[in-house]
Image (cartoon, rainbow, N blue to C red; front, side, top):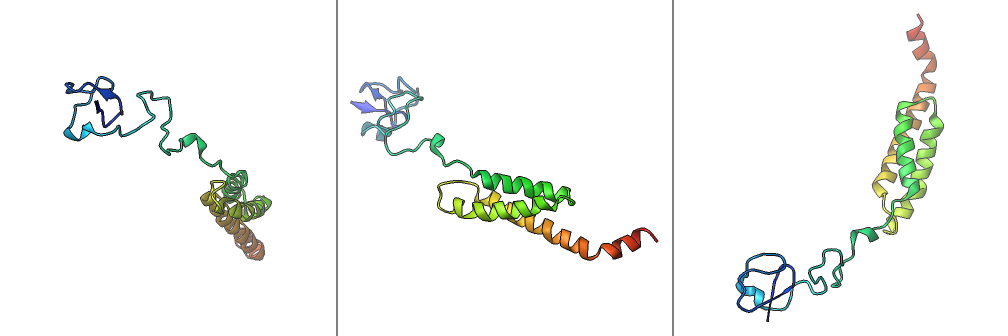
Length: 138
């Protein structure tokens, strides 16, 4: 008995094409099926150790919130509390995403960086407030 090397379906010995997927027979296709457990059903997950994409780790909510608050704090500077919150949430989310239990490490790092930029800009603006006002209203 021959097996299709693409879908694993059993093929008659005289067949030149797989009756299941329609691919042409190759000389190396006479061995065991390549994907055991698939059985030609595209909705049945393979049983040979493949982990479906649906089982991926969820995103960390703190990492997402950190990045969103960091982006908002870049555009709305009087609300510097958002930059501080982005910095704090990013620092809390960073260890959560390190072990692989949750995803979003890049978002946590982006929130930390954007929060730092917002806080540094706010400190610079407050330190130079008198200079800026004297230049604007001469």
